[in-house]
Image 1 (cartoon, one colour):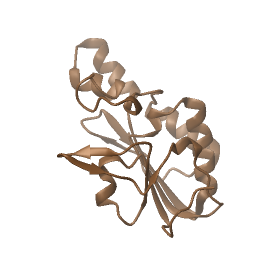
Image 2 (tube, one colour):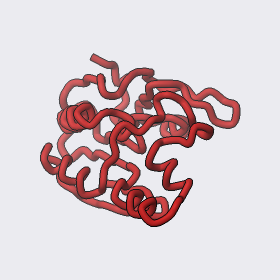
Image 3 (cartoon, helix red, strand yellow):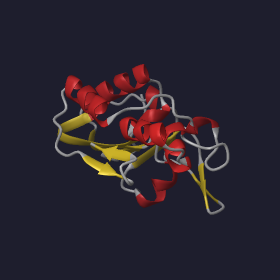
Image 4 (cartoon, helix red, strand yellow):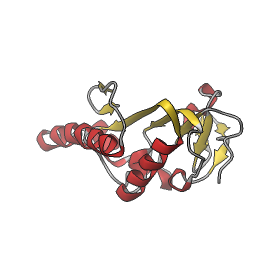
Length: 166
């Protein structure tokens, strides 16, 4: 069992956002680098293997990280997150939008869309854990969340439609 270190919010795949989310338990599989600085998460581990008691958190933030684990691991993690959340807790997910990216790439080459789809281009942000292991359309992720028991409060398109937030 992992220690939430007294925090009631958790930021999965915290990466470069960890310093701006100090009220969260920041979790990542590796240290991150920004402007020559090493950014260390509070908890260095594989998010797919996290375990916490039921009703531990009021909020779970999972921005641009669920696509870095296998589909079956993601479904299992979403089920555990549902259990970790206190009543009326919030899960905040941001992901690349597979349907939009596939549509863009079907009609033209777009290097930026390729980076969103694959996680990196071999140069920028090229580290082993940054590979995309599964991609989601907005509709698919909503169905996955509803199947677990979540209520969808808000859905939005982000990043010039390359991403979505649920």
